[in-house]
Length: 208
Ligand code: B12
Image (tube, rainbow, N blue to C red; front, side, top):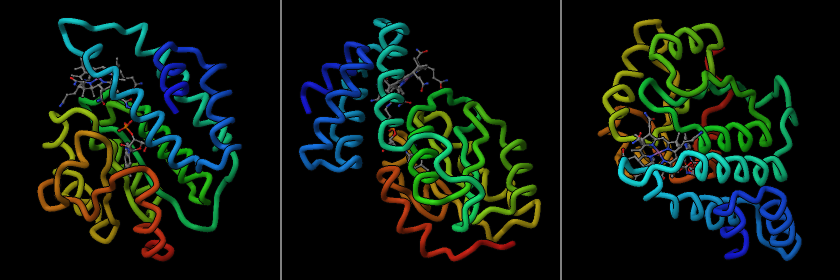
């Protein structure tokens, strides 16, 4: 796992993919590799994201390695228009972090959900419009920066204003997973992209 973390921190995508493949072949699950490898590596970049020591190139190269490792386990386009229902996801306005959201998208798609991704820095109205059009099983919010919390708290109200009171809202990502559902005004707070699968499977087929 240390070698995978080093490869990600070096921004060496090919090495990171090779190490992840080896770990998987030796019996480690993709979930363990993402949480103990990918997330741990990116946490080590903490100080590279401060005003004093900002290093965009280093972070971007590491981010690219992260996405390559994720694609190894969940190749994109694996499932389309799936039977399990639709989930609308976003990182809301004020938050440009999207690596975790993209992993969530791949995991949900790989598990048979149809994912509508509203992207990063997504205005509340855009998210609510997408939910109104899709009438999803649930809406998932990824938050890495604490300043986005007030926007997260408004999501249920924006959905209710469109008659979508019964669409469940779940949240995750480093800045949100430390809060309770009550603090964020959501239905569920997930520890990881994997932990939400149980919550979703309990929701049935949505409100369509
Ligand atoms: C990479 C990074 C960036 C990149 C983002 C690139 C990208 N495309 O995402 C760039 C360089 C752009 C960036 C910019 C900034 N960043 Co930054 N960044 C990070 C860093 C180093 C890693 C984040 C990451 O990608 N982690 C890896 C992913 C895979 O983990 P994850 O997102 O947690 O996702 C996992 C789970 O949480 C879960 N998950 C994620 N979302 C969701 C959602 C749901 C619904 C579910 C179920 C699960 C789930 O799934 C994943 C797999 O399990 C963190 C440090 C840290 N400790 O997190 C700082 C950090 C988040 N950034 C920070 C800051 C301050 C900034 C800037 C303001 C810096 C600046 N001075 O300009 C800017 C702008 C931010 C803005 N307005 O959004 C702070 C936030 C502090 C705070 N408490 O609010 C952090 C914590 C660094 C720090 N210690 O100061 N950043």
